[in-house]
Image 1 (cartoon, rainbow, N blue to C red):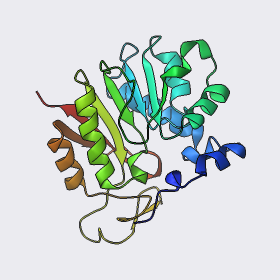
Image 2 (image 1 turned 135 degrees about the horizontal axis):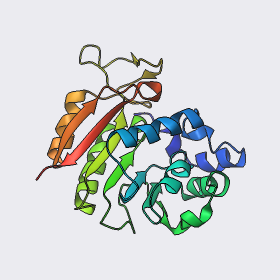
Image 3 (image 1 turned 30 degrees about the vertical axis):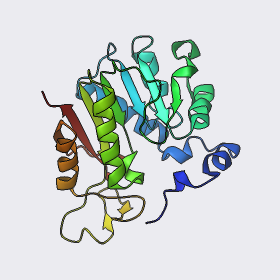
Image 4 (image 1 turned 180 degrees about the vertical axis):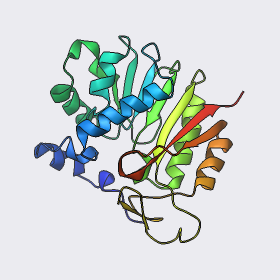
Length: 221
């Protein structure tokens, strides 16, 4: 299985040295940030929610969400803290709204130092670059660490059963693969893992950037 480019040694250092902190999180910075904010409003996220941004990158969402949330309600993780700090330095207008100590380096979905009273977590365009086993790990870890969670939102690429083993062209033109990045999954596999981790699963047909779909996992009673 081909390694994700984000996991290659030196990837972040090289990209940041070239000033590419926006590009390496997928580009389409303003468009995607606006879509993310609209998506959160549509599913009922509000300023009083304590929010965890998993795979926050260079704060494409964070630079918009931090001013909107009540003070102190934003936490973020990413495989590269340097990438988050670059976003903090260059993209966050009012730095008094976010303590940089809340930007936590975490490549394993271990959530070190994140408080347990998180209400909403989001992993946007995270599992598009990781295999299905990583989704399973993340689901179980989120369920274990955040007993008060109301919902976990995440995005994936889906492909039909017929032809799943081949490359698949998504609605937005991106070509995805079963065995290398960008990955696609079967909807039945996603639903199975969500249920196994103790959540209900809702898959929304929202057309998100590059043809991703939105999955909403809510803890079962």
